[in-house]
Image 1 (cartoon, rainbow, N blue to C red):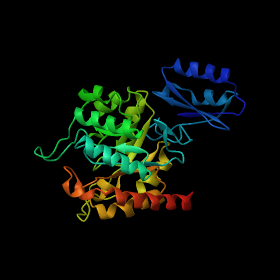
Image 2 (image 1 turned 90 degrees about the vertical axis):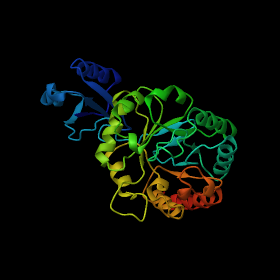
Image 3 (image 1 turned 135 degrees about the horizontal axis):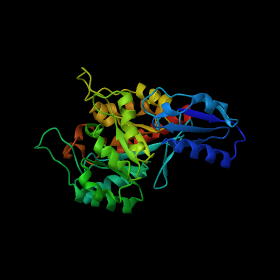
Image 4 (image 1 turned 90 degrees about the horizontal axis):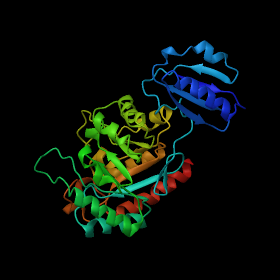
Amino acid sequence: MIAVLKQGTTPAQIQHLVDWLKHMNLDVHISEGAEVTILGLIGDTSRVDMELLKSLEMVDSVKRVSEPFKQANRKFHPKETIIDVGGVRVGGGYFAMIAGPCSVESEEQIISVANAVKQSGANILRGGAFKPRTSPYAFQGMKGEGIRLLLEAKKATGMPIVTEIMNIATLDLFADVDIIQVGARNMQNFDLLKELGKTKKPILLKRGLANTIQELLMSAEYIMSEGNEQVILCERGIRTFETATRNTLDLSAVAVLHNLTHLPVVVDPSHATGVAGLVPPMACAAAASGADGIMVEVHNNPSCALCDGAQSLTPEQFDELNRKIQRIREVIA
């Protein structure tokens, strides 16, 4: 349920109304816009007398929200959410260029790639320390040592870092990580999501391989319901019958999500296509579709990469891609 308050409502009046609603064991989310203030009521709203609430002098309108996701809902929070990641803003017109290797392999490799992508316009460094792999015999990542090397790359470049968590037991290792990524396989690991909701860190939440947009938003809701509103959604392709690409990139999800939620939406064309040659056109399409950023895998020697070399760009290819994306954003601005 949301209550739209009239212009001129004083802070004291708002607080009095919020206290009354909380007395009914409801959580209240306050969204203050330039012209109106919206109160989002979360919990068992059946106990709220809508007619009584509507009759209050300060209340302009009241309506129920039919969607099961509440805090992620644009109706609760009409303004775009802008997330600040170590000085880099994501959402609300700010575009994130997230780049780096699939896996951290060595100090020389991660710092070399980090310097290259920063010079080409990246503002957030990605790199996998823990790698969920289909085969138990594939490279599983450097784990804690990988995070240490990412932090060394952060020191060398000043870029904030994002890396994936697989198990809540390793959360202490992520204390200095700027953005914690939840991978596609963990999108509905609800215990993990709830714990991450208590961290107050930005969370990059990837859509599952076979999950709907509503299910993605409900996973975001798990994080937000624990108090962490810093969620970045990521479209990374879904599994279909098509075999020409690794997954099928659902760019319509960008527009749909922007209609439904105030949260930033980024696109990962590397995992979506699985083919380096397809990454630039899909990244450009993502920018044109209104995405708030792209997440691209870049390796200084893709043919020798320990993980996903086939979908990784070289630093030179990323540099060219960034120039194209900047031109596209100038056109659609």
